[in-house]
Amino acid sequence: MIRMKRILRQWRLGRLGRLCFFGLLLLHFVSTLVQPVAAQARGPLFTVELSGVVSTHTVDYLRRTLREAEANDAELLLIELGVTGAVLRDVRLVAADLANASVPVVVFVPPGIASGAAGSWLLAASHVAAMAPDTSFGVPVPLIEANANLGEQARELLLNEAILQLGSWSRERGRNDGWVEPAVREGIVFSNAQAIELIPPAINLVARDREELLTLLEGQVVVLADGETRTLRTLGQPTKLLEPTLWEMILMLLANPTVAFLLLIMAGVAAYAELVTPTLGVLAGLALILLMMALIGLFALPVRWLAVLGLFLAFGLVAADLFLPSQGTVTVLGLVLLVVSAMMMFDNAQAPGVAVAFWAILLVAVLIAAFATVGVLLAVRARNAPVTTGQEGMIGRLAEVRKPLEPEGMVFVEGALWRALSEDGDVEMGEWVRVTGVYDLRLTVKRLASTPTTGERPHEPNPTE
Image (cartoon, rainbow, N blue to C red):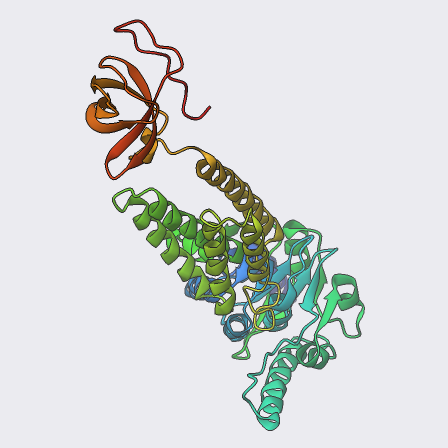
């Protein structure tokens, strides 16, 4: 009996041991399956590369990429902010969209970029703000341009609204908001070193490039606008670039201030060429197309239209100098007006960093100056050259006497018979005379100093000599 109880106890213990063994084995198997899944990203790592100017066309592009990232439940949307200027009304709108995104948004300022106003708004709105060394954000002018017609109270409300918005975004991300009010009211520029040294920092990370950024993003916890908390999984994950469509690329290119300026200049040149050398409308059509392309870009930017009018007036002065005896003075005035108008073409208060590149202004001025110089020289030469057409062009020509001049008769010159009056006595038929004047369809002629052999035409000098 005792032996039976001992056998039963051993059997139970063995069974329990086997169950524990198989349980541990099953737990290990499940953990090996779950661990790789937990380390995987939720969805794709989308990237967007911005350059040039943030305008309404850039906003449309960013909104499309954000919708695509949300539709694919992306792990994150990484925006590389390589811009040089921004239209404040547009960058403010897209910043609000990014702040309320249902996927994590990371804004990164790549090396060597001064991101300006776009950096201030988009870095503040992003869930993770990152900058490379030798970069900056902010502008030395206020981030909000109040309308001059607004009263003091309305202006103060507008500024406070912007301060509250930027400040709340920064505080929600655990970042410093002390820079917000001076940036909105007066303007301020922060380098990456200054931003990261604040307590707490104004940005989250400093990374040399995209690869280092993705490494540093691994394990970062972000809280979305709906309260959802996500832990980023970026280590070793591939990225997918969301490129603009062809139409989006064209629109953003046309909204570049330098491109819009050059298109406007080329439209003026084509229109002037059509007036000078008519081509049955070919150059006029080209001028119209170039003008429409320039206007597409200009309407996306805060343009001073008085400066655009100054550009056309400058063209008119340069063209008028070809017909005026000013010896280039009017051309110089036109070039000065062109340079000043080009430099004042865009309102920097509404779009900090948006301006025509100086190299483009200089290039256009030099080319127009060279063209005008050649034109003035040709015009002066034409004015000083003797007349070679019409009745006045006959002065100095040789004529053959077809009816004796006694002293009036007929001469043959330039393929036609003319009545002629001799200035120095009678001239026999067949002799050669030189035309000295034209009066009422009658020529005055003078006998040559030496009479050539009959039938031989004397040498006729070049009238330009």
